[in-house]
Amino acid sequence: MTRMTPLLERNEQFAGSYTPVALGLPAAQVLVVTCLDHRVDPAIFLGLQLGDAPVIRNAGGRVTQAVIDDLAYLAFLAGQLFGGQGAGGTLFEVAVIHHTQCGTGFLADSSFRHQAAETTGVPEAALEASAVVDPYITVKADVGRLLASPLLSPKVSVSGHVYDIATGRLATTLDARYP
Ligand SMILES: [Zn+2]
Image (cartoon, rainbow, N blue to C red; front, side, top):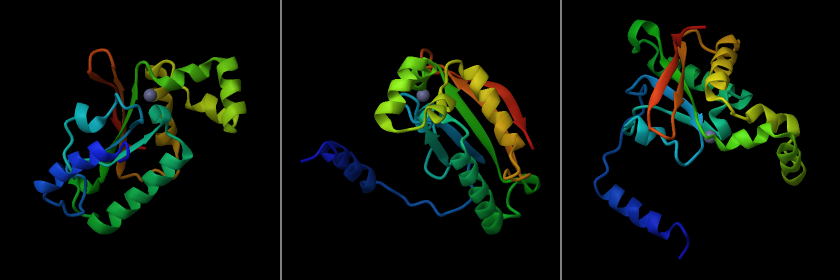
């Protein structure tokens, strides 16, 4: 008996009616970057099904170097496997989604951040860089960072959105753009 036991029972139910999906371009032609917050699950608020969209999640949904590296590889892989299949030779749109009430917001407070750095060993600058206080500001910064990266494939577009925890609504704040 572990805390996973009830979830394994749910998986048993899931597998009972499961149909595998072949590897292909994401059916929605979208890749989501968002926060790991358990109230912010894109499969649920965007109604994603298996095979619809890859999702990269970290604290805040920030466009870190690790996210950029993953996107570069995924674009390369998609180009190699399915190069000619996307509309007009494009591969997918990266939707960067930040949200209100983000737990990383506490990191904007210098004494909280200092204590977090001391306790966890994570550098204070890295903690500060992950803070989302105003999601409209950080999503704009992160879309800009991604569009400016030399690693971003020219066949990938980037858009920015804010998810409101209070209403469940997603608002597009930056329309999709190519680098
Ligand atoms: Zn968050």
